[in-house]
Image: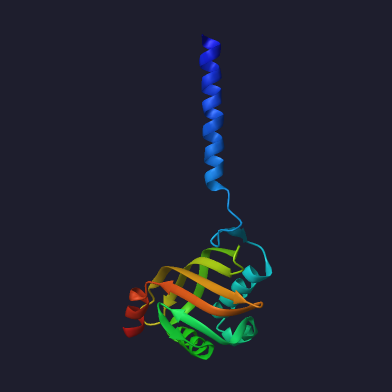
Length: 166
């Protein structure tokens, strides 16, 4: 009897493990499946862009972007030149702008789309109040033909805007 119970338990365990693995296997025809890489040229390009921002030198990475790249900063649509001007203006209000606790990875989807994702903590010291701000943010690059054609950057701007208006 013990052997039968043990056999049934082992069989049910194998079946449940097999069913679980089938749930997580990606289907090559599923456009939202693919693979993720954290150490590739596209992920490095994201890091170059964020370093250029921190160094107040965004113009140095313009070659990463297509000529007509679209930027969305908290859903406000902008051009590269507008982003360059706006992000540089932040350095007039804040010292020691840094990104920390960041993760970057590029998703290569089965349908051919490529997105680089970047999660980060933005920090800086207000020049007016000497307050330190820490904000969580998220950014993605959409790639076509090895150029970034679209960018989305999201963060809660409340504290940032308050410090700029003081």
